Length: 636
Image 1 (cartoon, rainbow, N blue to C red):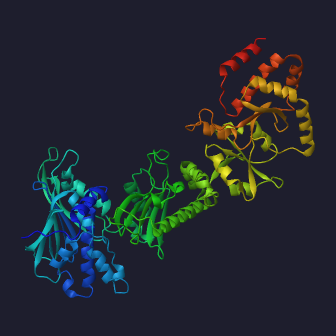
Image 2 (cartoon, rainbow, N blue to C red):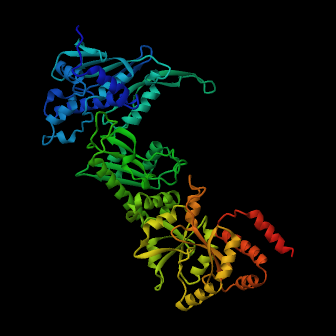
């Protein structure tokens, strides 16, 4: 029989599809199963109006068989089959899609047509089988035909079509697998466990049963329990579950079923903290099943972590992690989206970044935010557990993209408060502000304990004001982006613009600082270049001194930036101010030493500055020198 040539620039196009379009060779089985499902869909649709198309007995099914000896893998279906002309047209022309034509001809408005989801519409999925096959044979018999036909090809050099014997309507695809190479093991696609794994991964929700005869073992009848003997037997096994969990009514799915599904599909050892279901019809038609984990994955805050939702098209897995469906600040969410409407380009693996995908992503982001708000309001304990694991990511969301998401996230972030050391929202903080309070006060540090010991915190709380404790390095940067909440500006208690004094106190302080300007200049020179200024303050209560800062970069921000690559040396620095309590006995001691013993004043200044740095959680660059000075003064 004469070999026919493909009706396109076959060799070049087929080579491109086999080697470039499909990322993973394993998806060939998904493509062939999806095509088989489409063929059954077409037969079922036709049987609604044509009794000849209906099955005479049995049920619609897809079967898989593997023969390791002959290196043969077979996929059977009892769908609509193909005529000789359809064989020549659908398989002889690359990118010709019978499914697409069927949907076009039987689409909108016809009875039952809108209820049939046709998966394969692009006509190239079949050719993915050449990635693993040296030869492909298709034997098929159409509903209206008494003749069966065989299509055979070894690749881009062409194909043949001739008659064959086939008793039943449907299609059988036979793949002769390639020989193994140093880089590729094609034998794996003949192993029962691997076939079952691929069906479960990609085609678990095909609506028709996918069956395979599998070898099992059992104890031989009559063999003793202490020395049992076993025998092998073959049994039909249905490899897919068929009905997706997210397609079942909410009331029919138990919490345990959700938990089991989550653990199996997303490899977590704990049940999810929250389950979110969403079904949308209209501009975008999709269903989403989302999970809020109860804890962060071990690699969550690392470069190895990949965000993304599983993407299905009519129950067929298209993409294991579609990162475009989640914004970074909700990257912790696990789950899936199932939509038959997404535009797939050339293969089911290549997704067009179109308006529809963006619409779905936007709706999912809004839904997640809404559900987190409900959890915060109605399940505070669960929300705080969630926030402990993922609050840092929400704070990144406030800060990132120049604050583009700050309005949708600002009511979801939490801070430990000086009031009872409990978590509060910004809304809760503002609702209980004192009548005369104009700003939202905060302090940054490495821990709640360290922050609570800061002299400035004691000064602010002594006035009856609440202070937010910022313990994550991103927190203060996020507040800089927010700038204000409910028209109340944020104020770092460790910066020099803290305004807690009366006008009379301010005038007295100003006069005292001007009077002692020469002493401050000497102290600054004694300390060295770290300090931008030295001055008295009247805000400290029981502490002799503290470190504050001037300008936009705080002490906490400098500490964070100094840990980043490129900022270790000569990076962005805070303008440090050594503030000395005007009412503490140390003030009088310093004044006296300035008049009588400047050498001792220099030593006291260094020790005082070191103490203030330590209280602020800052490192000492000259620890050895400070230790020697302390010992020297102790033995005098």
